[in-house]
Length: 195
Image 1 (cartoon, rainbow, N blue to C red):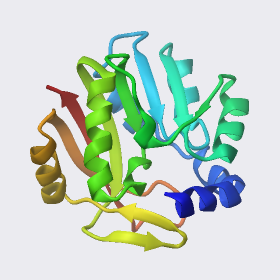
Image 2 (spheres, rainbow, N blue to C red; image 1 turned 90 degrees about the vertical axis):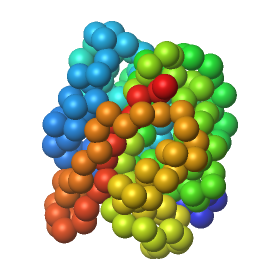
Image 3 (cartoon, helix red, strand yellow; image 1 turned 120 degrees about the vertical axis):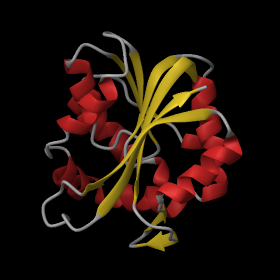
Image 4 (cartoon, rainbow, N blue to C red; image 1 turned 120 degrees about the horizontal axis):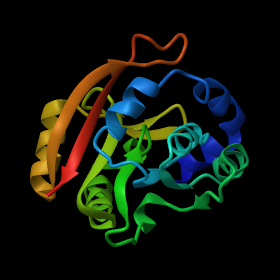
């Protein structure tokens, strides 16, 4: 995780410039349809703060965290809330959130740590709470371009979910990257419900 966080701290502005203004409302709304108005959401690895701001503008209570000090600074300024610096592994809440939004974030964890963190996310959710998360599509794991990635396919994710046994799959779907010039990259998206 250290290399990945160092990468984001060094390249925060370029990353924010390429992600903050992309049109992502179709996926955001797909997640929100599972939540009651005003529900409490954790933006888990908030990056630029794009999604935190969107959810707040739609009337939801949002808390946001990120491991990158630069993202915390930028997202706090952009969203107007106090974004906290926190590693995924440090999540220690119990039944606090109705939904957790982990967009392109927990994919930076090795598979073994991913299982542990998904378990902590379930514990942080209220009864029947919802998780949205997304991964680059594929089976590869390891360092690429200064960051660590765990890619996912439907079969790989099904195996992981079977091992941790705390979620049911509401939806799983594949999309193409919405960033300019990245349209050939595929993503596995999913909405999970706490059992």
